[in-house]
Length: 134
Image 1 (cartoon, rainbow, N blue to C red):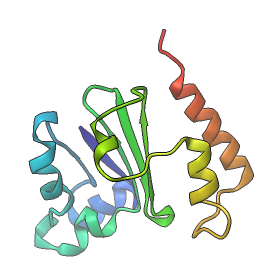
Image 2: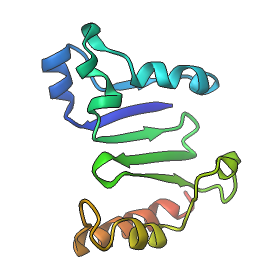
Image 3: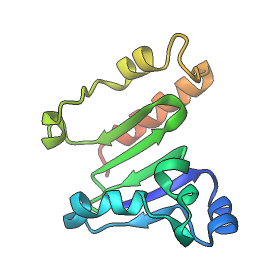
């Protein structure tokens, strides 16, 4: 899997820590290596650890069959997969359809309300991603 921090920008990490806010972990090592990667302190500086600084993160599985978009300001992670069932459903976390997530977790009075235009664009992008690949 590959994780890329989008906010702060790659330039922020390069300029302040001499590294980038991204990493790659082999699929068979995610369970043992993910926490080490997000808690890594570049130049032994805890302020550079992604667990403290990453505000927007994109994660893609090595199979290309799943991805995650997470935003700290929303306190939410969006999981995208074409598989209707999977082991993640037994982890004690509620998974809901995208419309329910938008209605219940971003409106009303959420930390950063989602503007109507962004809502429409987000739903259009999700629908395009859900379409079978030719």
